[in-house]
Amino acid sequence: MKKEHNPDNNTSEKLDSKNDTTPNINEQVSEDESKKKPEENKKTSEEIILELEDKLTRSFAEMENQRRRFEKEKEEAFDYGGFTFAKEALSLLDNLERSKKILENDESLKNSEALKKTIEHFEIINKDLISIFSKNNIKPIETLNKKLDPNFHQAMMEIEDDQKEPGTIIQEIQKGFTIKDRLLRPSLVGVSKKTDNKDKKSEKNIEN
Image 1 (cartoon, helix red, strand yellow):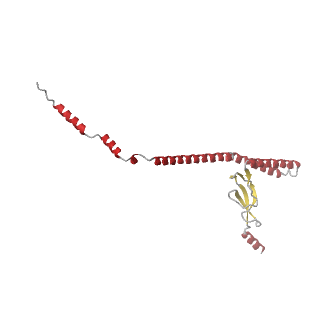
Image 2 (cartoon, helix red, strand yellow):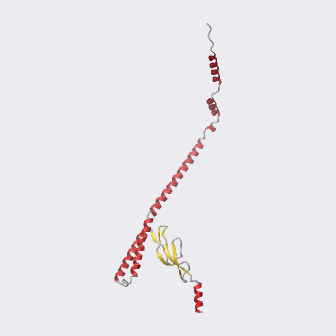
Image 3 (cartoon, helix red, strand yellow):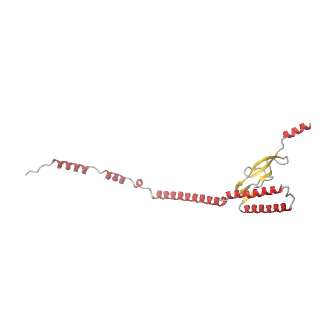
């Protein structure tokens, strides 16, 4: 008996043969990469070391910057942490000074022993407070006979005085303070100014 010829078998054989001859894309890529020089495929040891050194240097620099920021914030918190409290505490000095002036201006107490003893006690308390503030780096600002400094003084009025240079502090209205190198509150002061020439001219005209 003759074998039957199956046309499908021929077709499958042809396809298989074509598949065998078709080049594999992955094999081509691997061959192309293998043809490349080693220098093109990977970095040299020196380049890798230099990159690592650069990364380490940057990391250490960042760590140092963070450490410095932390130290600065810690110092400021320690030095100025009581800034608000110190500013509020100054009202004690203000109240003592006001009470002292009220008593001194009281006609019924003038020249009395009670007034003298009370004023003495007020002055002792005032000195003690100033001493406590000074131990905590809170110090009064010098004012009288000093030139006006906007960083520490606030002029509240001008007073005519030909004996002083214009801008000289001749009256202290409220004492100012600093805490370390920072202004706690400015001194309220009165400064000198030259006598107005118009007033002098008007006086001369009246005399004439």
